[in-house]
Length: 382
Ligand code: PMP
Image 1 (cartoon, rainbow, N blue to C red):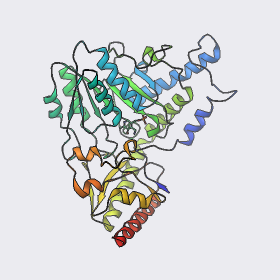
Image 2 (image 1 turned 120 degrees about the vertical axis):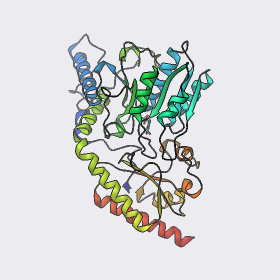
Image 3 (image 1 turned 180 degrees about the vertical axis):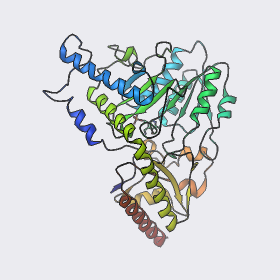
Image 4 (image 1 turned 120 degrees about the horizontal axis):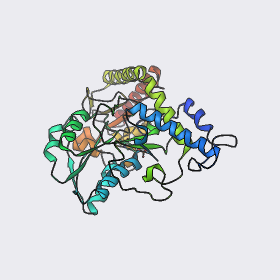
């Protein structure tokens, strides 16, 4: 089938696979970077540090602010639990939104059971959080605000800069889940006062099971670890470093960053043509702000067509998604769209298509043809 579910995961770039292979087998640099007593271990450690520098360069931060994790889920857990548990004596209030990824929402629910209070901001109908709403939710005991950069279901981009500036003035920590933004949209931590940033390699053609949490001013900002053990990653994330994953992630981010000027307009064109061709066939509704949106994601409903039935029809021909993949398997409609006020047929018909630099215009036309045929079949059955 044609794969249009890259917001869920992407293929690993061949350049990245090649780099990763060099860290695995006999004759390769498969050593433990914590074994610094011998030269092979030192070589592995040097490679990890090189990756740290490369990732820091792409994001505009210092290399010792990059803490490697198993992905964005772990980075989000570490950011929220790490700050909350280390600073509980100063306050027990957190602010997030109703449209976060489950790895943020469920971490917040767990913290609520442990005595923290969480405010869940509601987005406007365009799918973004008003900076004023963040300001109004602040309390003297607020420890941290956590918001998604680019929503994984709608692609809507939050007004991160405006919110970051408000929080810097208020002296409240800001965590941003940039899993869908990193490598695709510009992120400059040197210019934007974000304290904590999560990312995940498999969203930008790196390997699954690799990510990082960037902690600005790490020496000043205390976090309580989730994993204890050998004290790797500045004591914040024990466990033998996954050298091949880390090298893969930094290579993928370097590649994505160096290609961004060409990939962004290319993918934007793919999305534009996809929407135009669909609109020639059907009456569709696009969910979320069309301007303030990632070119990599579109979320839409076709008038009168339910998403479950459509995705069933397309299962072997076009891979699309409804809701988020992580909560699929349930028939609940998207909580993200619901929070935006989408209801009725539009809610139950919502489908996400997501794109990548590997798609061609022919892929787009073929996908639209197959979707059109599937919808016509469904309409005939009715
Ligand atoms: N946050 C967002 C916005 C995501 O899209 C995802 C991936 N579905 C995650 C977090 C979780 O990332 P990972 O798969 O690396 O745990």
